Image 1 (tube, each protein chain N blue to C red):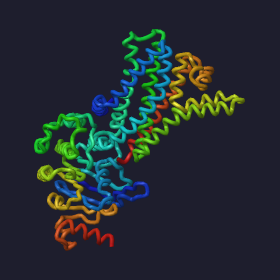
Image 2: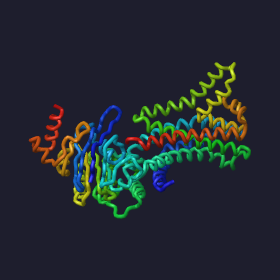
Image 3: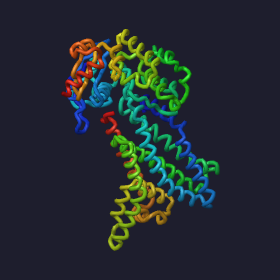
Image 4: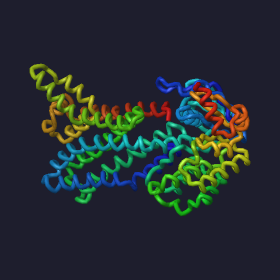
Length: 264
Length: 238
């Protein structure tokens, strides 16, 4: 990381640390984890329920907050780009300056209730760490997608609409679409196409990794069950993780390119 | 010195700049004027490298302004954008520090405007609580902070009270005396008459007139800049 990136990140971080949204976001996960641990009886159930909520909330909040962030930072971005700063450094500074506090807020929020209990059930520590890792990576994925949207759409309402559209598509409609496909083609061997379909959705990939780790595939949707049959254990996790990483790297690369060429 | 030659820029189907040629001598103050949508802000943003021209050439003190990674020429530029919006939870003091660090802590800062605007008491407040005018003052302080050789000011006095506006104008004149090259856009003609050596009149993406204020008023046989511009615009439209 060059000095310039560091300085931009530092100032964005300082801004974020004092903002209300970050506090609310962090506290949300703290109360959620605390509540689930208390009321679900076992840590395993708590982590499973947490996963379900995390996979819906992180994409939604990240997409919306990041899109707004990019639009709000527009004038400040222009001011900084009028300084002797490379665009690539500015982009990295903006991206990390948002992704780090969001990811950190989530991880701290979820981890604290477990930490105060001495780390929770030792057998589930791996699953908890996986959940934290997935949340962090999904944050990176959806900030990257939001950057792409906000740099692409000049109009902020349109951008916000597109961000919500992406969430609806990946978070809600996707599951429905999978169910429809399963119902319609129930008599055909559709496992492979379904498998391919799961790579088209970072949220589903996150879910897949989680359930491969928790070994409760059947509890979490049809693609999960299919996935587990094909890839059990480490190779499945590795494959899904690679695909998830691609979901971060590709939008990030596209956004960086847009940012470099953009007319501000 | 700023040299612009044959600069064009098209946004979608709109030709915003259609071959702008402009030479601004070192130490000159040039007022960029023209109706809304004439391309003033686009021209300024292209000067800064914020917007990429489609064709044409810009040089600032012999350094080409381009898409490349050489951004060192911007160390010479002080820019005051039209709208000031900063990270809400930072203070002006933190903003100054950040920009200073980004520029590698140059010595000899010009903080005269901070005193003259009476901003000292506002420096540690979060920027979100400052009024629009105060933010504009912070904006002005930033533009002058690094003693730039080239100043690019987009409607600098918009939103300032008369007193602060006078402070800023004095500062611009002082910078000019020290040899800075200044580009100002403004709709306030009296202000331009007071500050500028030359005015460049931009209409439909082309510089229609470039020269001293007096020349403009004599060619159009009008008493002041405002009427001269109006006469020019009417003539162009007709």
